[in-house]
Structure formats: C-alpha cells, structure tokens
Image (tube, rainbow, N blue to C red; front, side, top):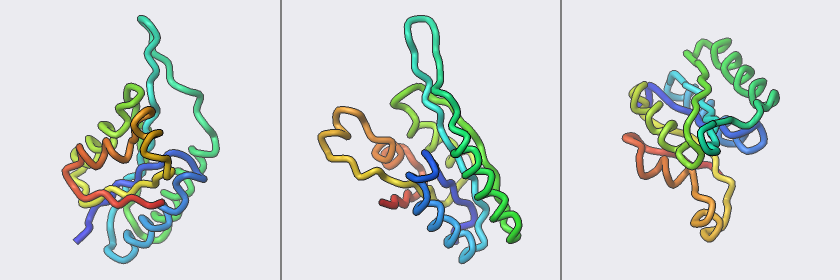
Length: 137
C-alpha cells in the first residue's frame, strides 16, 4: 500500500505529468503527499547563494496542495536547500525522513552525455532512495 508519497517538482512545466500521476496515485491509495522542491545552493568562494525564487513554481505547489486537501487528502509542501549537484540527496532524505513509500518525479529526458557532464537528479535519487522511485517523462 502506498500511504505516503513524495512528489519532487522542478517547475510547473517540467513537473506537470509527474504531479498528475502522483495525484492519481494519491486518490487510488488514499495517500498523503509531500511536495518538495530543492533549491540548489551555488558556492562561490566563502559565500553561497541560491537562484531567485520562481513565483510560478510557488503557485504550482500551493495549488497542488490545496487541490489535494480540498479532496480530503493530507498534503504539504517543503522547500529544501542543497548544494548544487546534490539535489537528489535532499529528495531521498526527505523521503526517508517522512517514511515515504514512493517518490514520484519528472525527467527532462536529456541525453546520456548531458547527464554525464551535468549530472542527473533522477540518477542521484535512484541510487540514494530507500523506497521505489517512479520517473515520469
């Protein structure tokens, strides 16, 4: 049974299909959902900074949580921070902390070469998660 889900979102456009699937799973199994977004901290010398917040992402997360709670589902959202290229650690840690039964996340579908050069949050989550990961293209 899938009692708790973590939905990892990157942006409204990138995460729409994953959110739709997470919502369907939550309805089917009466699951609680934690929506997480990880802000990558960029370190430059002695200082760290995070990219500017995208209001559309905030609205997407708030709307998703409101929609689920209006339908009787338990749903919350969290903004996490992690060093750049370690976003997957934060997602896997959130799932472990909440004892999630499943992580749902989208994939941009980059090439293998791009993943080798730039890294892949999906790959990192797949290797670190203590629960199954459902990747939606």
